Length: 342
Image (cartoon, rainbow, N blue to C red; front, side, top):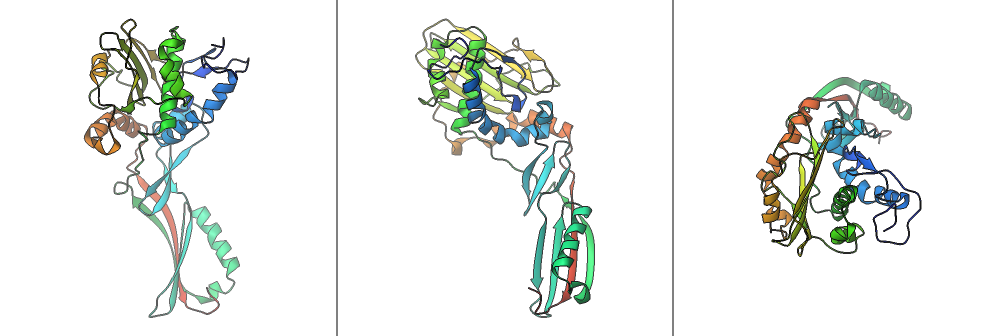
């Protein structure tokens, strides 16, 4: 192993780096030198960690974690009804993309132009541009109206795909486990299959885990990123477990032929503060008893997953009221049909 990188490869750089145990983009605070060299820190940061960051951006924005970690993203795009809506960290929402639609009544020959914009200023700019593009518009208009439409988002809540079976996200999660293992002074040879998986050199059984709670004594006013690594020589198992934002939960079978000392290693961070914990009560036996590593996406129980996301949902609603109304400005123009209009 290179002195500043635990990866068993030859193309290291001599410069060390500050590697976060959990990625900074999802609220990771603890970082350490001499885990990964600068080259591999950057390589993973722009590949597997970037995939994880993109997938979790909506969740982080809803919690305000992106502001805490100094990310530039202030909003994410959600589909609400047939419109794309920007959702901001404070819960504010607005139309993401303006639109202009023209329809002609086949019976009356009257054309109706409808413009939608995120705010009145933007709407007025679009109207000015429309009048420049169509100099005869003013003389042909019969009626025109401006509306401030409010869309009830209770009926159109944003929905997101939960990336339970994305290999790059799994590799990033496994890097988190390896980071903390090496940070704790443990030998890298014991997690060789994990490191090989991070390098995309082998496969590991990784599946969602919502069978039961693993972190049993969570602080009341906290959202945690947590990891557990437990080994049992009697059962010949070395198992990893990761919870991101108290919601996304996966279990990893690191080694099915483990023969070293029994142990349970645990670490949690509060994404809102600099608090970290390594003394919470852990249900490690549930991890050792688990054997269903062939679980498929279609077999996931939605009720269990929803229950697992309940804590996250509660804190997201505390941060911002996502059941508010989306402001939408609309301008409607009705005019007689004319051949010089398209």
